[in-house]
Amino acid sequence: MSGNRIWLFDTTLRDGGQTRGVDFSRADKVAIANALDDIGIDYIEAGWPGANPTDDAFFAKPPKLKNAKLVSFGMTRRGGRSAANDPGLNAVINVDVDAACLVGKTWDFHVKTALNISLDENLEMIRQSLIAAKNCGREPIFDCEHFFDGYKNNPVFALDCIRAATEGGATWVVLCDTNGGTLPNEVFEIVGHVHNQMPNVQLGIHCHNDAGVAIANSLAAITAGARQVQGTINGLGERCGNANLISLIPTLVLKTDYETSISESNLPKLMGLSRFLDDRLNRPSDAHAPYVGAAAFAHKGGLHASAAQKDPRTYEHVPPEKVGNERHYLVSDQAGRSNMLARFAQFSIKIDPNDERLETLISLVKEKEFEGWSFDSAEASFELLARQMLGEVPEYFRIGRFRVMDERRFNARGELVVESEATTTIFVGDQSFHEAAVGNGPVNAVDTAMRKALVAAYPSLADVELVDYKVRILDAGDGTGTGAITRVMIEFCVPDGTVWRTVGLSTNIIDASVAALGDGMIWKLQRDKINGPKPKQV
Image 1 (cartoon, one colour):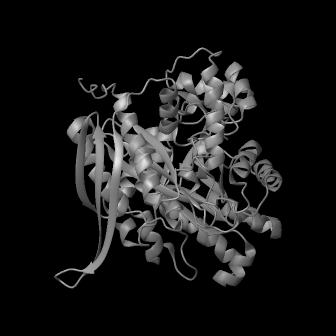
Image 2: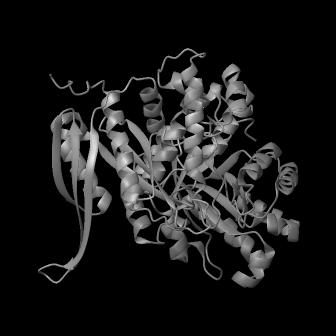
Image 3: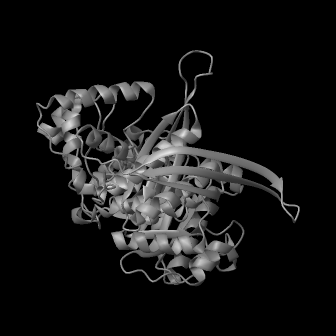
């Protein structure tokens, strides 16, 4: 066996492609493969040659990797054919890659009912297919489909499948919990028994997450003797997904004595890899994902934040910087003095802990949270609130009147179009700016009109980009629904990569949006240390 070394086998480009709503292009696959290679993954399973045009295009010109072995995936030969006379198998083993991972039946029930062949024929299919892969110069790897169900039903046959794969030259035999229904104690027991029966076979583990225990099952298998672990980035995969390597890798590196190809110094790249994949798929990142989520090291309750400041180990199982993350102290209606002081430190706001304004701010935040404001994610709005209370923010501008009109009509070509037009008046010192703009929605229109007015006074705001906009309708609690309040959260960014978020609250969605937009612009001006307008000369 391989001692304490664990080989990491990523199946994002194949298993992950089966996720509902995920459709990789060839460019996606190349970019993700290069990112996985850069971080130090050992094996990258890139897809199934012959299964679809995207995979065919990828394997026709696969990327040249520096560290990882590129793997093709497919089935063993079909019953009633030889390995040489099976087009599906040959499409998999003839592409220019380092290894071929072939999947075969190891549950006698499937062999008899799905393949409708004898158990002996299935063993020959496994053996001959792996020999064919090896003869083509590919490292042969065997995935034991539904192994745990097969072992529980017929352990003798399941072990015979492993022997057949070994006789075919398989370097790895991977035990698959294909339907994700096996529990950790069962995985530990079964993998341990296989390891004891066949100590010279290099075992791998491949777990689905249908029972929510894919990572636990993977760790149990490793403890029992498996030395290759398969999974996907962010747990992508069909149904409930696969074991999440983004969580599994730091667990192995930081919490066990096992060695992997990813060093502790390389762990901070995991956060970037996780978000890179989400960005590539145009999907939001999970803020509560272990290790890499934006809220993974966020402290909200006053008691927790106080203890965390004295010794972060109290409520943090690993230092956040180990995985490229950072500690956050959230401000909310649960906040106390410790939270507030910690947030002040993050924003470089200096205040005496005994300053009476601190208690006033805590009370104000709690009152606003009760009304429906949320400062957990809108850190820019909180910073402005604090600095304004301390008198550190000049009145850069005042928002006067605004008007938004929507029009639904047919244009000259007979096409149905919907347009929004906004007008706004902005006061900067003793000057007023009145602007109008057309947008692809009311918020875009009013943002454009406000920006036109403000850029005349503050040119640096021209680079601000609105990148995310979220609306939530809050029940006012009167039981009628007539007093519903709208909360708008907006995310901004600028070319240097700085990102900030603001919040607005109103019974009117446009008014809430204007409040959040205004905060966003003020925060940018304050961050850039722009001077406010000169007072009117008397």
